[in-house]
Length: 406
Image (tube, rainbow, N blue to C red; front, side, top):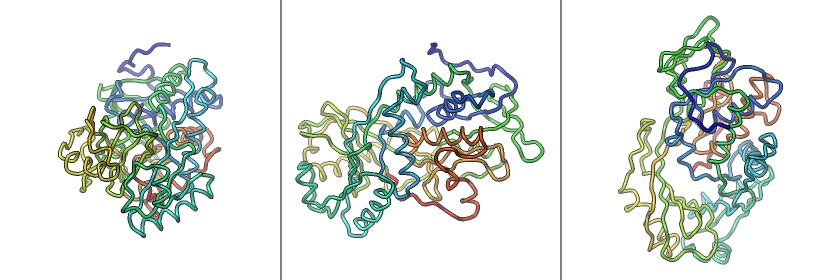
């Protein structure tokens, strides 16, 4: 197996499927297509950053959860948990694939007002009905289970300790990509800069920055924060914007005596266990504007003025901490309803969306990649019905709102 970076020139002049974006989402589609005996077409994956260092996948907290406000999103993450815990089996039984697991320290949502506490009670019923193990905890129960928290201003907490926490998303992405290539998917280093529409409103050809052009049967938009730019090439307005999210890894002078759940504080700051006395925190500013997809500049004042004070208030042991690393990444934010946009465009019918995951893409990639592959092969979904995520809901004013966005 070669780990060499892909070249910049497509091997063929025509492909059945061209996937724009080769990180986790694009590689999930490529894997599920290439590994399915019912598909014998050519696959081209075009990735502008073959190092993958600036992708959304590389900048995440690498966690999954079941605590969503829509049952469909719960089901999607349940498949992600199943997929990760049997990665080798799901990737064809290849003995080279590592055995992964989930470090299920859970997500802890904290409510400091009755309105949000009531919301946690309501979505818990949705989650439990979908099979999640969500528990509600009073302030006293939180204090007894996690005595490091300051819960003087907390009314209620929500946590799930089953299949909710850290997993090695980098390994999952790497092996899906490698095995897709081994099974015949062509990866090229480059950028799609144009599309040619033919009769019937179909994308007939895509043009790369190198000048190369390939004809295509279908185009899959897996371009993450650049999704709107790619859609515009096909004449489609897509309500997905890059929104900047900041992360810090820090070491505590006095580490906690037990795992720290990924804690979503009422301040908007979140923090989780990282191991070895280190922790990872994240957040964003009070204003959350769209940014350019290549804007990764840090807001250093945010740490001093907002994030660190919030951490020290919630967990007093975090008064004495030292930042070890920091970075900025992007959410590909669906600004209409914070949910995925998936499947075919109603008019440009061979243009498929895989966009707008609003911070949930890492855990949703296995189910979403499988779904797009099913649509391409069978013309419909065989596993989880993803039609509620289709583009027409936005065009027709039928949003599917997901409120559990961090």
